[in-house]
Amino acid sequence: MTTAGDGVDIESAGSGLTDESSAYRKRRDEIAALAADHTVGDPIPEVEYTDAEHALWRLVSQRLAERHRHLAAPEFLAAAERLDVTGEGVPQLRDVSDRLHGLTGFRLRPAAGVVPFALFCGSLADRYFHSTQYLRDGATPFYSTEPDILHEVIGHGSAMADDRFAALYRLAGEAVRRVESETAVQFVAKTFWFTIECGLLDAADGPRAYGASIVSSYGELEHFRSADIRPLDIADMVHVDYDITQYQTTLYSARSLAHLEDVAGEFWASCDDTSIEKLLVVDI
Image 1 (cartoon, rainbow, N blue to C red):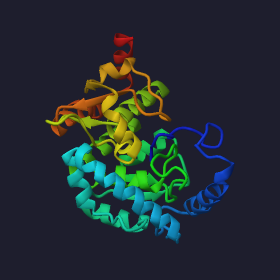
Image 2 (image 1 turned 90 degrees about the horizontal axis):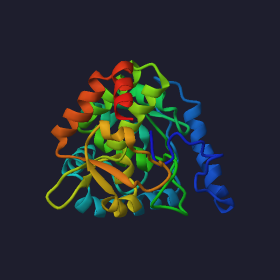
Image 3 (image 1 turned 60 degrees about the vertical axis):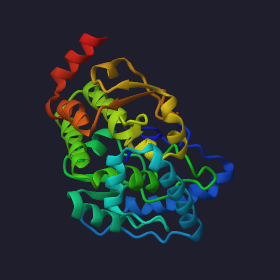
């Protein structure tokens, strides 16, 4: 459950909310409370979404679908078709979770907001994905600096409906469970950001997105090809800083999904504190 605002305290670091969006803040907290009261193993609580929220979902999902045809990786498009989430209104998280579980074994777990990376990513090893249930502020429909159900379902849910992408999510979770130092956890987080969140795949007409933060952001889809796009290289990421609240200035593109598995997948499958420390020392 990561997005442009993941890891940021939305109350103090800025969620893009203003005094005019106090109604949104109240609604977000109301829905988040359902997740806060949820116990793992119990049915995911249903949300009675408003007509305005359904209309917002239709608007954003349909506009994203238009951009996806030209800018999303074919592998992502096939995965999204497999998940087959309706564009007619906000889906119930319980229904998406059941559908996803039947496809790749992943389940969604309701979250009240941002989840610390080690907990969020570690849960992927058990095929659990923490997901919010509230929808972004209608005042800023095409970009959200905090996680929302649109990002979780259209971005991450679609990818996890594919067996190969789902396996990469699990490997990242196993990696963050394996490492112990905060430095190692943060580097796994960086590799997760530049792949699962903001990753690209080469295509004949230019790089195409599969990363959840890009495919769920209309603005990011418009912007990403103007970034400094580099060949996928874990060691190169050591030198690159990134800002999770802004459009990305540096991105990495794998030659293919198989190349992504070879580079990121193999890194997550084998990394530990020692190997990451050596990587950081060698490349500083």
